[in-house]
Length: 463
Length: 86
Image (cartoon, rainbow over all chains, first blue to last red):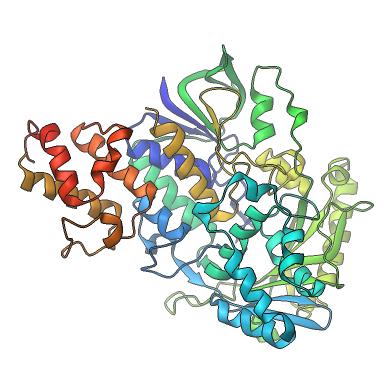
């Protein structure tokens, strides 16, 4: 009998596990995959390390900062700033045809860029910053407000609205076309008022620190241990049935599998279709280069590009991918410590929108053919906005919505989860709670904070 | 535990929760939140650390007693009187 059973060994599940184990609970984290990480995992291929998910750790604040989600999670997990080994970004940009806004971890750069490119909008932009809701003040109503409507009230230049929405939607909007205002406020803060950073060793460093902490506190991590069913009796969750048929019982169950994914595990007749699953999934074309990107004249950390004045954030309607917009991530371009030097290879990662259904239906041969084709198209689109690195590519890999679904079991390969969020983490079933992407926070820091706060509210406060 | 020992125990908990805070100039009469960056999650952690370390239960309706060092110590004094100092 466990005090708490946690489904999923991603950032949120591990963080929740640490909190429960720290306060002496008997707790296990169950993970179906053979490795940890969930949506933010890592792998090794042909002798090289790859990150999945992580472009940048957002919500970056420097050592000594006491406010913000990163400082909060360090206190809550009893970890040190150095444990995350974060190096800040160099500089990023939002690139539209003929216009670019650069930004870094100090909002002053973005402000001056807005003032230069949109001189009539700078006061409006400042008003936008002032009107952002603080993390702790967010209420349900903010998640029912249209961001596009709010931005149209605040800014009078449609192009500036599209340019601001582009990076913010890319890094955390589960909804098509519009975004809820609460999520926008969270993302604006995490991207522009806090910032981007990356551990030199990638996301594996953070995950391994979390796992070590969890195990040192007595938590049990079970890999290759999928949950096939959540057992419910009289409206209460009493335990789980594993893929192996084995049963575990627990006083509380916290699931990071996603909302609809979790409801489908329950032995009840809940109408899971009443909840809309997310429709947005991605491909990513990863290239290893024989040169460092800066040697090709590319010194930006992240480039959010869009090839017209209108930003289209929607599932591709009639093709496998939509490459009109995308994100170019260059993991080399962070301010790493001198002792670390640079990464062993130059790397360019380009992410584009993709349609899960189309990718899912392909047989093996067609799948490979479409992958090869779209790899080229994604690169061709991106190199309109960054130096053409294609002659220097020495190795490649690509993930598709199918890959995301295969390793995370998230419906539709929807990286940012369902279109509505379960902010308080409760479900119709007593003792069953949600954390992670569908609870409402995204990104690495966001997921960890989600795990912490749901563990505090539901696993610890009631014990 | 004596009030002095209880105070030391609280300081130890605060150091665990907020290792970056300088607690040497803490004014016992002033509210914690006016002197330290503590949010509601951190306050809950004080309660939970008390339970973890000393098996002391602080019900939710008593949280208001934990606003300053002085009020915390006087609130905990009867609850912790029988606990031996470490």
